[in-house]
Length: 79
Image (tube, rainbow, N blue to C red; front, side):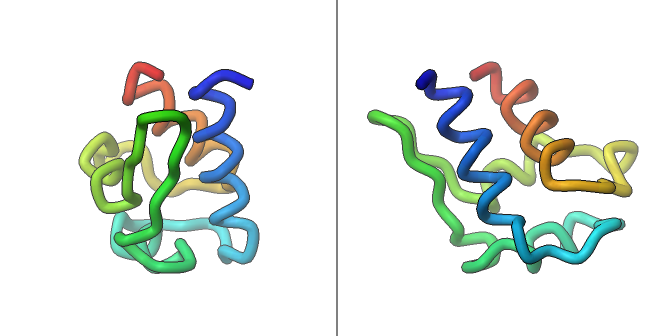
């Protein structure tokens, strides 16, 4: 499994109980189990939900599902 696939899967899993659509960055952070402190790890890479939120822009919202959130974050992070 690649780092990209690993992080993608962790984001999707972290949002499994989220209520969609998610309309704002604040709603997205609140949807993660530990909020902004939720951490994804793969190999030597460690990233928090708060850090990944900096990769998103207002036009990314609303998110309709966890896969789209993960797709957007891993693409913008260049994983």
